[in-house]
Amino acid sequence: MRPQLPDIEAYYNGTDFDYRAIWNRRRSEVAVHFGFYDDHARHHAAALDNMNRVLADWVGIAAGERVLDAGCGLGNACFWLARHRGAQVVGLNIVKRQIADCQKRARQQPGLGISFVQGDFCKMPFQDQSFDVVWACESVCHTAEKAQFYQEAFRVLRPGGRLVMAEYMRTTRPVSLASEQLLANWLRPWAIPDIDTMEEHRSHAASVGFREIEMVDATPNVRVSLRNLHSISKRWLPLGRLLHAVRWVSDVRLGNAQASVRQYEALLAGAWVYGLLRARKGYEKKSQGSSCLSPH
Image (cartoon, rainbow, N blue to C red):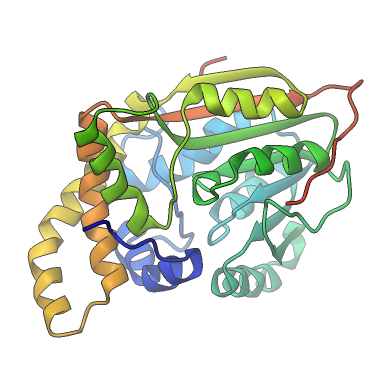
């Protein structure tokens, strides 16, 4: 039977405890993404923040630049960029509960220059040429209209502005039947309709006018984090199934754990990679509007 696809709000509301208490244990800043392991980060908590450093360094975010975090989750990257890069950051998120949490924390730290807006990154509530950088970490996967996101990102960037992304990317379309099933069993409980290949992402970016498009397979740096989630979830599942049977654990939470096992199995099967993308908006080409270097 095909797993049901929860909506994005239901997924993140239903898994809030898992992200806060399990994935971000003993951390005040809650990261809703995987960690990047290298010489700067050798353990889980450091690797989560290190993902921010890698992406920020890759596109050279400087003090005073205006950055849009498209699909900002619980604001980890926004607060990190403001503190460590001196950026002026706007977090955009469709999940009402997460935005309310981010706004509360921003009010408690008024000097950081961060604001949060509830909205759809395929139909951004911002004027043309409003930002120097559009940042999207493991968020574009949630839309079925990925080309629309690229169009909107291009529109809101100033000439010369940069796009930086971290995303799950399928290795080909289609993969084997068994691998497609693994992908479905991972993606659908995570409220992800599908993931695109690297070349599909490149095509989306190029079609709206982005230039200097570069892509990196960062799977070797993220593999430890992916495996950690698999191990945590696999250990928890027997208890989770029991608690689900007595209705102490929701369908969404149980599905999240099951999917967290499948994501690593799909990786081992060669169905997907963890990709990074950066691109630049040229100075000559005008925005079309829309409805909607290796890391080290």
